[in-house]
Image (cartoon, rainbow, N blue to C red):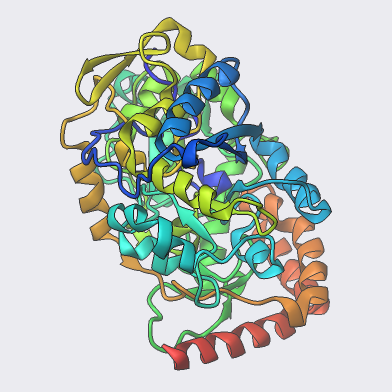
Length: 493
């Protein structure tokens, strides 16, 4: 199987979608910002780099090659410390609070929360460092990434150069589509899935028609102030920016009723509300459809990863949200002893084709072979070095797989340009004044969110109860504070 891309497209359950792994046309080969490596002939500076993902077997071997290259280029080496996806948030919170030595660290809207930790002082403000040592980053990044990821007017991390908008898609096990001659041309809404799900349920007893887990939420037309919390602005509201409780919206009730209907019909697993992952279904192929964040040529990546054909169709439009801009970032720790060297390394990682592919794909001739200047093919040993590509910076430098079209990155740029701005793009809520109420609302939310969103319970019975409990926990006070901050932000624009 070609390069494993399981962690390139962020599952929607983490998006937080997204979403997601790439290979690259390698474009500009200049060593932007590449200062002399000698460091005056002194010993290279070692940077401690914490990043997300399970550490692969050959990490130490590849790291040695990375360090040979970066020591010569910029007088820097890295000590890579990888923490698996499920543990990253908690472990990083503990280490940051204890002042654990670190220089560079992964952060995002969904793991080791970027905005929250920037405001806490965990990350160094990067404005001057970008100007001094990050000009290459400014040249390769779509300006919307740096502008959209500012916190209170400043940059505290470097976003990965990848897909800019978030767009959801319905993914399908193509083998089952073809077996039953099912047409997805008119599939977009949740309701439009029903005839297809019915066919699979009636004919494939071992297949889960709609594969979801406890983090699933129906796709609704809102820009959420905080993911998986009730405060939101309607996507069509670009003028008034009225903060609403989206659980009270008629669209929400209709979507939850449809989910409950699907659940009762057996289209959804009875354990969906408590299931943490559907990966076993993808491994076995015993699924028909699910929803995931997409990007150009995503079907190729999914098919390569699962080992059987996957096809998709849009479930929504491409929209640029705060969380999609902040979906993958590298920050410099506020207690770093080497911030200038850290920025030099991040600049090289985002502009140097050789380094970017070494970090992503391993050692040429051992983990992969080059088929042409910008196309690679995995070798059997690649299984010992499988990295989450989207976490490491400029994905448009990574080599293409044989199945990828030559114009892949041009299509990515078109995709990025096609996105429309969400109403709250650039707004970051400061929860300081309502932290107690937020904690109480979150506790209440945990009681009902997964059962409602997965269709496990009747929304006409449970949604009113949930809303009542949320209001008792202080939701109205939170919404008033959010509206006040949104109004101030709107006035300042």
